[in-house]
Image (cartoon, rainbow, N blue to C red; front, side, top):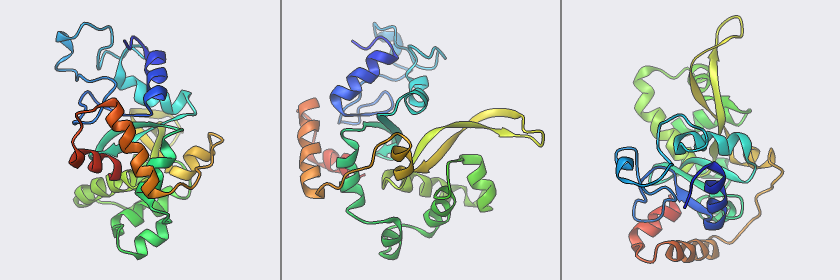
Length: 229
């Protein structure tokens, strides 16, 4: 039974990975219910209460700001998920297949919009609003921009690393927090971890075995999509 943030992190490190929201998507989620279902669940863990100890929405940023062994980003089915440090290299091996960003772009598997974004993020940690500002992205670019951001996260070229407010001319923060992004390599390097090189095929089989351990009813089509992104 997960009762708080500490329990969640402990369980996540046992499982290795999880969907981020309250929907297992046919694979696995540590918190298997969303905010619209929670009134029917006997648990102190509730979505969108603002309590950092018992609100799973708060945990997504806490793992980035307080932990050095868990990544959170849009990783599975174009939506959010968690992967711990032990399992991250296996997904990385499958998703990247040994390619650098430049090699992926040259081979045509990365869009030009994604390249524009990556070129900005590769210079250092940067908030979403500043990516748009520095890149000169316009409102009519929004759909392509959003798709490219998910593309880069799913392919494990970039990842979320925190949050930041916009700043006025006096350097004062204002408005809602914006997600901060960095490259995957920088994210783990900042946490004292260099991603080892694993064989993609062996990594796929290892992840699949863990999925079936967590959810024996998982279907192959969904397993494949979950692993490959």
